[in-house]
Image: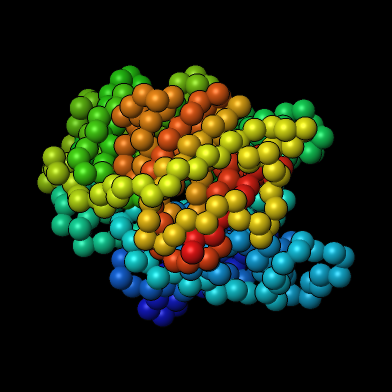
Length: 431
Ligand code: C2O
Ligand code: CU
Ligand code: CU
């Protein structure tokens, strides 16, 4: 997407038709009428405003996932943009704020280069509204990253991966809340990359940078390359790693991003390389190595100087659990406006995350590093500063979270979007 003037983007959420399954038309709710929405290019040090106009039949709230923003531009679940003419006479949520038709979200973009994304965050309806298409990328770039010889231009591919189910006529199928499958989160049987089912990308036999995002409501993936090969991870949710890490497999839970380089010169010209999901044993997408080409890119052994880990001034515990048929944090279903913690700005804390199920735990407006899983060192794929971590069944995950953005209202929640809508969220306040 291009700014309408420097630092200002305008995007309209609207109902549109797209051909996702060949030969059928799917009604999508899209930013700009597309699914995924436009990619916003942000630059560290250049504040940006994104004006979101809502022409959908429902209220929305736009959250920039991974952004370090003032809380009034966070896309809080009850801070809603309502379609023109919409009135809230039938009892909204306490503290609800309604913007008529449009809201300007202000982003200072005072943060490291990273792969961010944006999506709807409406109270109780995030899952069905994202399922209909309300999500897209926002990329932050900076001088530190510009100085590196990483693959760029058409050799940089942001890949928004999600699953969907379809009716015969091509419309999205989303189960009713009483459906049993709903409890664990909603999964579809078709995997889409950037809105297309099992797409094929022609690549040259050179290094490519893949910005992997799991934008699924509930599905987790273990990504591999077939017939074999490695991902060189260069970045995590919140920016470049200090040094690259090689992986044969990348587990990615909803909300997480992995910034990786794949060297297609390792495969014969004419061959196909499939990105597969080892969990569902199915393909995600295919690359066809179409031709040789010169490659002056490289993955340097030193990538960046991420912020160091400050000492923790407090330890807190957040337990993600199903209690009496609702999904809770520390025993409570979501209570907007009731903070569970009050960390101080400029400090860091150890947060111990525990769970009874797979809960991809996400913290807004702040970043963390994984310190330990079940008291043991984290996995190689836990490297770097992150904003989302998959807490597996009965696991104890310790993270060090730093609060160096803005004072005010924050939240943490499960990024399984059905769990989120079933109240697995909590507020905290940075003071
Ligand atoms: Cu991507 Cu509050 O979420
Ligand atoms: Cu977020
Ligand atoms: Cu969950």
